[in-house]
Length: 467
Image (cartoon, rainbow, N blue to C red):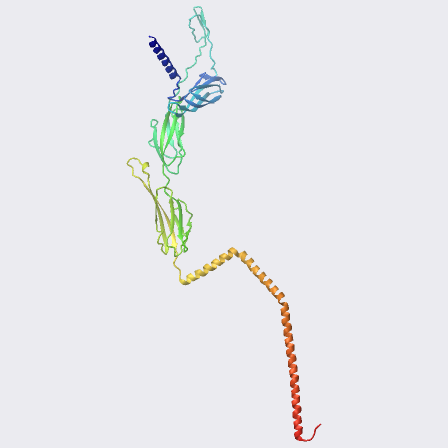
């Protein structure tokens, strides 16, 4: 008996604990924001209390139009209040918005709500008098009446009921500046399609809500990638309920083209020399020319890189270059990716071609080659001289100065030797003259002597003595 009683007590305690847990566990199956006010209308410059409640967790910001007040705070399935002051006329609008998290789904949702109060001059509440036990007071257009010893002095002013918030979250119009959506817009159709060129990376969406109190938010319309993109138009009704319109935007792939183009040829030393294109390469320029090639250039080395991975490049006319004009063709081809195709569609092929005109010179004659060789040598010398003109002039001046110094030194050093040579020459001339004189004297003496002997012989022959 005691055991059964104990089991019953434990069961009751367990049920109570479970009920308490279920009551305290927060449920966020749906997030929302709501606004309530202490008054349904307000006098010019009057004050009233605003209470903002959130179902979900997140930062909620409240602002006031045509009045003062507002607040920003974190709400977790809770609410906050603040005092609002109305403007002088018209109406005062309270707007609350925030991103709320749903604990059940772990998703964040943008929520908003608004409420408008009219500003009226006769918004003050009336007074009422009390009656005897249990008797109901009455009111009339005359303002007072009496019945059975009972009197009443109540005002006939009544507080109107709050207008129910609109739940209309549909669109009345939807257009895109960059193209026409398909199918044609209807408010009950929620999905549309649009195709844009590669050059367009964002779209401008104009969405008009059916209810003027509803708000519209466009997401995903910027930084569109190649292929399919989803643009969402979120329409939030006055009561916080939402509807989504989606636009499947297909951005075309980048057009096939060359990313770079480099032309080279092999010179007579086996070196690859780049030759410039005319005009300078640009991906959207399809025709080019090259400088005239020498007769010994047999082929060109072409580096052509496409802008799309997997595209094929076919080059024709770069080998076996002929004398005169040659045309080189570079053709790019690509096939549409299969994953972007709809069922039953055939892949599209895209091609583009670039052309290069190049002239190959004729082989020169032997005399022309010799002339070219001299021109080349002279050109080399001329080029070298032009590059080293200052050095050449300074070098020549240096050589002249050194030669002049050397000559001066030579003259100074050999001057004495020069004088000795002159002296010796003079002496040689003098000696020679003296020897000639002596020799002449001797010769004359011999002649006189011979004459004397001859005369003496003659006298003897004649006889007698002569004095």
